[in-house]
Length: 289
Image 1: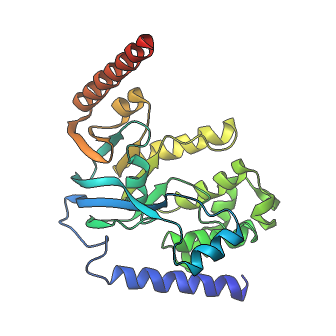
Image 2 (image 1 turned 90 degrees about the vertical axis):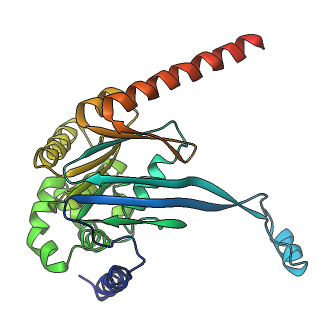
């Protein structure tokens, strides 16, 4: 482990410690029966209305103090819900509804613009599995970097290092820079690190298609094993049959707003009915043209 890597890990740990001691942060403790409490969260992004393509245009706008105009886009709007320990919560919504943004907030990747989230337990986010990697470092170094992002200490990673490498099936490639990995290899390594701990809360954006057929089978078995052990699950999926099979509760988000919350079958039925209605309306508009 190089001094540079250790320095980065130290900075990450300091940041994590600062955040965990902040009473306004998203990691406040809850009553024992509650796993996650989302309170009036909204998320806004700033996007530019126009684009500065040349250095000349940038200089002119800087002199005139007229840089790119920005506008705020609200992708989540006053979302509130509560999840009890052991719940399997499905999150439904059409493309662009804000589902993945919500999961990233729950995973600590984003911080909400307004509101707060309180979480009770260790979280294992299975989202963008290689998002925390530095492509210039080896797979070995990235185990420690990515582990630090997931609040794992060096001692645990030292103890579980061989287990991570074995599960990832990378072999000698673990000593190669990640920039030489295929996307499947990076996902394998990310999955092996993220599922190392026994989480209290499992956050999944779609059921994973990681690596080759053999590894996909192994990763699915690992997820099913975690679910069977009673962990709280938050699942985003476009597969309604998958949501019905796995989840006991659902929320439905549309245009950043919470439309419906309740038993999985009831919410799924309402969502499917709405989707079919939209499809018919779209077809009617197309025929009129």
